[in-house]
Length: 411
Image (tube, rainbow, N blue to C red; front, side, top):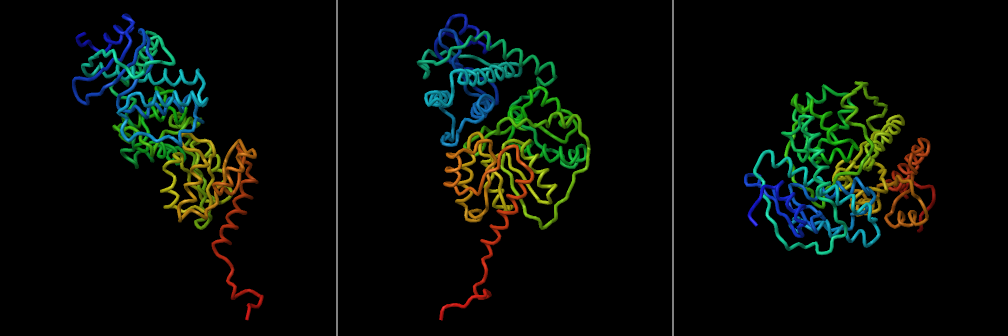
């Protein structure tokens, strides 16, 4: 069969009940390429594009954010277009995903690919080539291609109606003019935005992190982009060192529109203990930060646990609060990593969790955690925990000098 334009090829596969692989690629730079997998005219999987691993992890974060990906060895190059699909099958076999979750992740990945093909076809000539061979010989779900295409078309239409047709949701907002951005926002909103707009999160990643519709999120950022305080840039795909966090419930998009411009309280002293909070939820970090600030402690938070160690080494906190349930890497693994680092091995680590059963406490002891705090955190318990552990840590770091003790030494 000769080459068809991409959309005609997609429809041809549906109408002719094609089984195999449809490769779509651009005839001009940046020469993007995608693959759609069919079984009897129905779509079973989609891969390729600029960010296959980001797309896969986002889909997992939306559907089952507690799925532990920490034990996976991610390929340095995602040349195997079915690697993510095969991994999902393994999760399902291990009963970490049920059939409904498996299908939802597959649908999200396919729709994103179709969206990108629709957008790409507006700016370049995309062609499709059919191949009857496919590495997915026994698909676990078969999905109606016309329904998926219609869904992707609706998303593309909404994107165009918002006047974003010239912007890819795979671009990442970054700070272009820091002083201009800071002058237009309250200190609180600026700090929150600076954490997110860090050259690592695309618009699609941010929509998952802050739990906002993609169009709404982009609309909230666009005024800053148009004024030059932010800009959209291309970023590489993920690797094993970074992943977008799960949905946090943060309302950054709302805050950008309704900025109250209230001054930030600073109750802490310059020499007060520095407390770190590692939690993929911005909402949880900010709640803890407010409690610590009221109690006079300095603090900082880290929402990407895989980036925690370098910052902890650089800032040397007196105590670390660590969320137990996070995507990709859980609290036990992060705690073990912390205590393997010479500069941090004596730093107290307290888990923040809604589960603290016997098994959890045994696992916590194995990784040398100093305790548990239940979510939502009780302020009095929080302060008591800090005072007790920081004081104990200071005593162990500065043991009493035997020469100054009242007892007599051996002769």
